[in-house]
Image 1 (cartoon, rainbow, N blue to C red):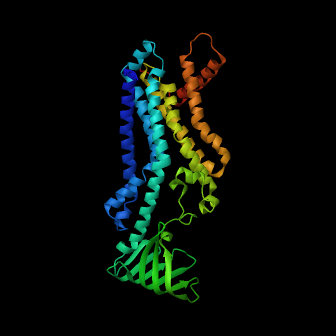
Image 2: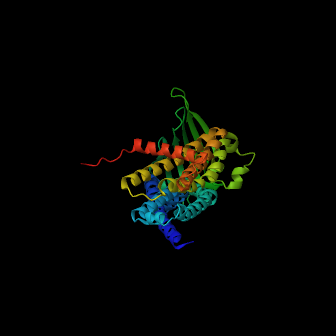
Image 3: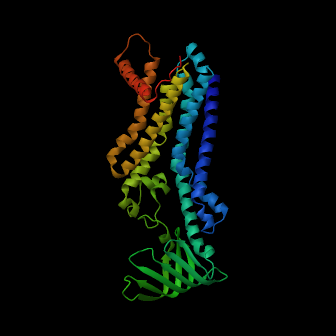
Amino acid sequence: MRIFSRYVFRQAAGSFALILASLTGIVWIALALRQFNVVTSQGQDTWMLVKMTSLAVPNLMAIIAPFSFLIAALHTLNRLNTDSELIVLSAAGSKVWTVARPLILLALLVSIFLAFVGHLAQPWSMRLLSDYLVQVRSDLLTQVIQPGRFSSPEPDLMFHIRDRSADGELLGLVMHDTRDKSQSQSYLAERGTIVKQDGTAYLVMSTGHILRRTDADAPPQIVAFDKYVVDLDRFESQDDGSGEKKPRERYWDELVHPSPDSKIFRNSPGQFRSEIHERLVGPLYPIAFVFIIVAFVGQARSTRSSRMQSLVLTFLFAATCRMAGLALNSAVTRDASMLVALYGVPIGAIVLSLIIIKRSDRQRSGVSIFGRVADAMTGTFETVLRLVVPRRKVAP
């Protein structure tokens, strides 16, 4: 790598690391504020809050990292142009690929990072987060609920215990559940124990009664039991997987070859298809971004207003491509034919950018059909630029 290429790579990589850390910090703070009830109302310590919110960050890296690279590359090229370095290179006869090579290398590294996050870091973090959620749900009864107090961990659900034994067993347990508006149920048990098994927490009640009322005018139904088990996962919003790993929590082999008995796969095969192709198409966007940037703002310009217009429109165009990819990923869940459009967005952006770069580098003499197509596309883009961002009027 030449001296100038190393210089551009260091500038872009440093900006990317700073922007990525800043955006990740902002996202982490937002997640921590949303999940603050883990500490305030569910009796967990601050360390549990930090672990749960941090494990959710890799799930957002597929969006944060490409945009961080986009902003860093735009900032680097704008700085090179402001310092007249691009103008000097252009005057010396260098082509646009002199600046593009280190940015393309950085884009490839970002794509590898996204592939690592999608295939390894994200499933690992989501699985661990699921285990912590089970721990929080089980600790809800063993730590938060105090003897002699009525506790309501969520609306229309109330707990009360008479006392707690030294080994953590709940004594004199009362649970009143009216979340189902068609019926109300009250559980009364002499003892209750929390049992964790296969990633799920259960409340095992011994020697008690269930009072169930389905009609306000009818007498309640009373069911006596020696032992009754309640799934604590019922206190959270659930899917139809019956404790199975969600598609985002699965590694590649588990996604491509799910178990034939998987209830999630039978009910929602589109979620597996969407997750598989999102992990494949996500790393393409940093590569698409770098070609878009090189095509539209990679050339030296002396007019500041024109340069700023190009920077803004380049960012909007690249961001629109990524948002379209996210929308198409949701559409793939319902319709497999949308896969063509899903891959077509980043690949089409790369092809269009290469056409514009080729048009800028070709000789002015001997215009080919390929060049005419590039001229037409570039002219259309410049027309849209003038319509969206009006030129600044100069005072007489």
